[in-house]
Length: 171
Image (cartoon, rainbow, N blue to C red):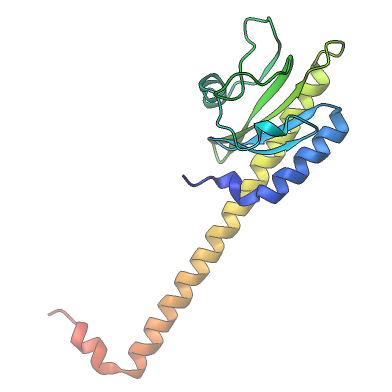
C-alpha cells in the first residue's frame, strides 16, 4: 500500500526524536497501517500494525489521552501487549484525509499525561499534516511540469514531421 507519510520517513524519525526530547515520553508516528518512527524506547513497536481500535479512533479523527484502567485506554498495536500505561494520541490530517497518527506513551506510573502532552501531539500532527500537503503539492507541480515537457516534445516533433500530423488527422 502507498503511504503518503512514508514519503517523509526520515523526517518522521527526526520529528519523533525531537518530540521525545521535549516531552520526556516515548514518541511514535504511524501511517495508516504501521508505526514508521519510534523514539525513546519501545523500539519493538516499530513496523508493527495499528490495532483495530487505534485505526477506528484515527479514522474518526479523535484525539485521546488515557491511562491503563480507563475505559477509553486502547492498545496501539494488533498484538495489544505494548507494556505502557499512559497514552496520548492525535490523528495526522492532510488535505482533509487521515494519513497517520502521532502518539506519546509512557510506563512511568508517577507521571500522568495531560494538557501539555495533548497540545504537543496536536501541534505535531498538525505540523506533519501541513508538511505532507507541501510534499504532495510539490509532487503535483513536478508531475505537471513533466506533462508540459512531454506535451512540448510531442508538439515539437509534430512540427518537424508534418506528415505525422496529417497521418493522425481524422476527417
